[in-house]
Image 1 (tube, rainbow, N blue to C red):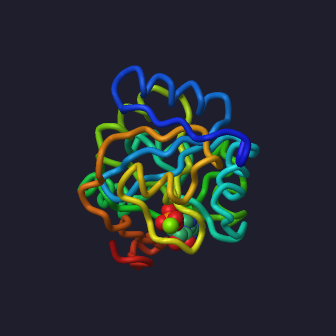
Image 2: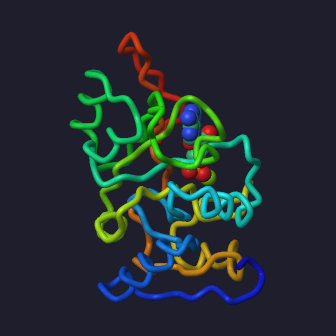
Length: 200
Ligand code: AMP
Ligand code: MG
């Protein structure tokens, strides 16, 4: 609960990942390293858990989150993947490319995860800790950067705590992030054209 307890930090070994998976399953918030920056993860299929991300970050509720998945097969449960999107995913996943695609009617995710939009941003990250965590849970993870809204994205556990200590349940310490730059965000249109919404 934000403000009530100090945030726990654990090494991202097998025991740490198991602990993070258990906290996420219960609807908690966990900061996780990715190859870009630390993400603030919650289960994307729970409206309560997703609401906690917005509250902890002080993020406006009209700013949608990125949903992290293991791979293209998991992404296809939540978004419509056409040929152009599949080609991009096959070329760049796992990796720092986020695709904005039509959200499936049966996506099974909290509407707030995409701020009520008909599209959903999805990415399959390459970082071994985030991949291990996604393999340890049976739901996708909504994960924006693990900082208070309006502040710089964190690349170390210390940066995460400087912004969010006491507001989140756990930090999985996987050391510094290698890229330090956010993922590229690309929208794939129905005609197959691609718009880069954010360079990464
Ligand atoms: P962050 O993870 O904090 O770097 O923020 C996620 C970024 O993804 C924000 O800039 C959002 O505006 C963008 N984003 C997420 N979902 C969508 C979407 N459905 N359409 C366009 N942009 C999106
Ligand atoms: Mg951010």
